[in-house]
Amino acid sequence: MSFDLTDKLVWVAGQHGMVGRAMMRRLEREPCALLLDPGRTAVDLRRQSEVEDWMAAQRPRIAFLTAGRVGGMYANDAFPADFLYDNLLIEANIIHAAYRTGVEKLLFFGSSCIYPRDAPQPIPEAALLTGPLERTNEAYAVAKIAGIKLCQAYRRQHGCDFISAMPTNLYGPGDNFHPETSHVPAALLRRFHEAKMARAAEVVVWGSGTPRREFLYVDDLADAGIHLLRHYSGESHINIGAGYDVTIAEFAEHIKRCVGFEGRIVYDRSRPDGTPRKLLDSRRIQALGWSATTPLDEGLKRYYDWFLSNQGKLRETVIEAATSK
Image 1: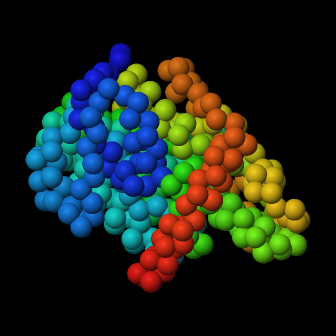
Image 2: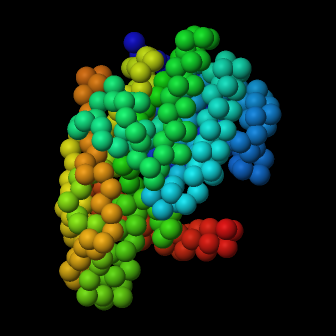
């Protein structure tokens, strides 16, 4: 199959987040029309009537569902009600409104945290719901699993061409660098940069450094999203990964070189390591003709360049987040 985007009106829900921005950049190269987000003050995605009214008025033909509440391990563990409530409502409202307004195709983006904590490695799509989740991000994972099941249910009951993709750990332009809510790549990049500027002797990395993680540049994810939209229509979700993993210690060394920090790395072994390994089995999307193309060092260079060019905005975002709690 090959789904045609030509002259279609496309809505990226959540286009101001890291994944949403990457999708907008990638879609600018396609022969489609882009629908701009109405903004949170105009349409609260947690309010069903507001979402349905706006989508009925705008009538997008294609939807990418990247909107949601996201955060690192601390935020997920500290605010489980917020993560569960907001994400459930956002995805349910958009998916139902997409059905009601005749959206031709919808792609829902989930997260690799949907899989059991002790899933086999690399993690196949079939591992979903085969064991207990990681406790610290259970609420977020449950919401993302519900999104997958919503897409499957609307496909079965109503014949909707709604599909789901599960990306691995992401990094890239537009990331969240807040010290309390960021993910590992942003937290480490900021920590090494601040240590460099302060001429510190060392940077402390939590844990032993031995866990293995997979990292994907966000523009590669956007390219995978377009590929799936064109070439996939099925009930099962699809993994999107880089195809290889590195230890946290290796990842920290990559960031150290990228930033130009000259001190040493110290590992705080009193902090938890988390899951020993998390690598997605991406053979299904590779069989469809897609694979990641951005090497880790190249992706981190682009990441750091964007960080340096946007430090003023990032400081404003951190202050705003801190004062709005």
